[in-house]
Image (cartoon, rainbow, N blue to C red; front, side, top):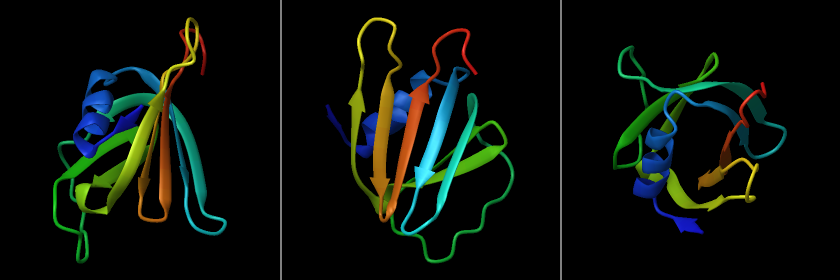
Amino acid sequence: MPLDFDAVIRWLTQHLGVRVMLAMQGAGNTAMSVTGHLLRVDDGEITLIDPSPGRIEVFSVGGATIVLLEGDFEQAGTTDFGTGGAPIVQASFGEVVVTFAELPVGQG
């Protein structure tokens, strides 16, 4: 199911406090994967150089912080594998693909 930026943020907000897996794949050999509780980051300081216009949403998973820029958002979608499956949301921000997947209870 296709999602816009607002729907991605809504999915993330609905999963705050839930254990998730975050994976990022960029151009070339750039990748990251981390698991932990999904949290919203409201404090601290992030410096962005010439960010695209739009909202800036900041979350953390495990020890990683992810900054989502509305101006870089291209497309997103969600998948539910059915009973016992983990809901997933995947979004493209420029050349970076970000995937959040809810971990089943008892995993990770």
